[in-house]
Length: 248
Image 1 (tube, one colour):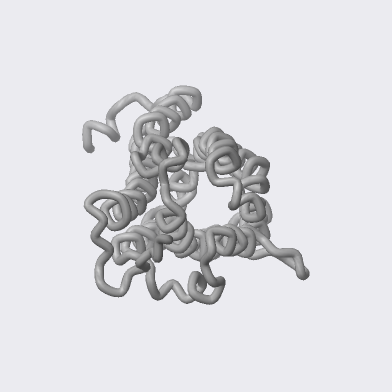
Image 2 (cartoon, one colour; image 1 turned 90 degrees about the horizontal axis):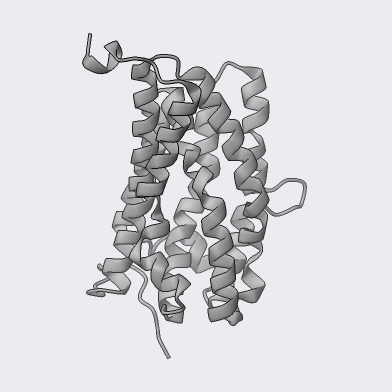
């Protein structure tokens, strides 16, 4: 047996504390690209690049959740988790998070079809997002659910972002509905996932797998912003085929 397997199993409270510590250290609220955004220092073109590239991640979230749902034989779990599909895809003529993100992209001045095509997404962003789908497909269900726990930390970031976008980029006002909706959706989703992980990570080895999965998800989010920073801030080298802002 490994040293981890032989270690004392953490209490539910200790496990939650370890998970929250991962977010405090690694969640992308500390990334320089976000710090520039919140200080009002991004240009319209840089915000366009962010909205266009982030759309690729947003569009894959319901795919991720569908893959995760297919792995569970627990009807109660599936019933609770499928709410996420409705939140992002919408239902019965009511647009979801993806539609709201497109409104944000349009508010930056981008054409909707251009964003939806995903043709100009940075290669590193595409690789990072696809790695998330791979994690949910190949790792255990426990790890897949634990990877979603970045939502534990998103509420504070979203509130900060809404305030910053309203103050520094008032021309984005018509595109902020996505963040308004996530202020209530993300905490609800996160609490369900956290309770499920606390209940189902029964051994120390399983607990460490859950913590590692959350760490990996934080790395995936950070990597997307690394790509944006390199391509559009410093040194500002978008690769061939990637989106190129047309600054006034």
